[in-house]
Amino acid sequence: MAYTTIDDPSEYFTTLLYTGNATDNRNLTNSANAGDFKPDWLWLKERSSTSSHQLHDSTRGSSFALMSDSTAVEDEDANRVQAFQTNGFQVGTASTVNQDTITMVAWQWKANGGTTASNTDGSITSTVQANTTAGFSIVTYTGNATEGATFGHGLGATPDLVIVKGRADADNWAVFNGTSTTNSRSLHLDSTDGEIPVSSYNFWNLYWDETRPSSTVVTLGVDSKVNKNSGTKVAYCFRSIQGYSKIGSYVGNGSTNGPFAYTGFKPAWLIVKGVSANNREWFIFDGTRNPTNPFNKYVKAESTDAEASSTFGDFCSNGFKVRSDGASYNSSGETFFYYAIAENPFVSSEGVPTTAR
Image 1: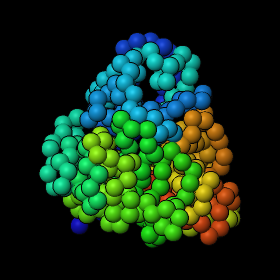
Image 2: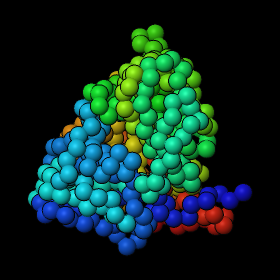
Image 3: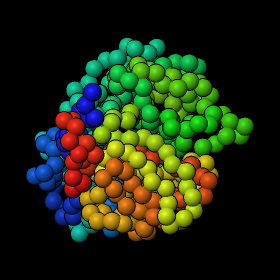
């Protein structure tokens, strides 16, 4: 069996940096060495200014945004993201995506080119746009407040990470963390809280009915954040793909000679979150903003803060090495969740070691 089926990760994920100019109908095109794909999930953040993250997808429509740092409902603005295009996207004059002189970062994922299908694998019929090769799907569904209700995710294998947000309800972003060994397995993308113990509040039951996702469905509890009666929801589902993506965890040691996380590739993008303690942010790094080691430029998914810098570690050819003793990502004995996407695999589909670029 081949080490990986994806030799060029940029065909499924890429990062674009640009500077706003307040011009309407502005086409933003990925670099020539990026994969020539039409993005289906677009995550935008101002780097040089304080503002909310803007999350758009081709299932809900390009003009609709949710904000990872907020519980706010879905917002529509035709002057924000105007279209998804081959090898890029178009923005309007909205200050959140194209303010003059403001530097921006845009992370882009490929699902199925905007083509969706009805999925009846679960008790709730869902609308699914899946990329089974890259282990990513966008799902929309309407809740029914029934304990044990399920929706199909379309990945064809068990997801390791599921992120759910109400589109019309001001609720937290509910996160299923498949790497967790506790009976919580639940986080909030818009919060610095760790996994809340079942003894305090049973999200494991209320969100996921104490059931891990299967290869076909995600099981829901009765909490309104994931299963409000008649509530419209969007779910982003991910699974690890050898040589392309890795959803995992590491345990901090409190040392500048921190833990090494083996991913099987040099990361192009990385999100890290402490799960066993509160006041642990969602740090997002990428190799485009951090082309050399140590990588240090980050934004935080739960925060409107502008980009900041603090040494985290090194992107290596087969993973990443933590080189900070900071409690936010290396407190001794604490568990940290991560989701990483490859710049290039450690070994190609033909079994040949690749050179970290």
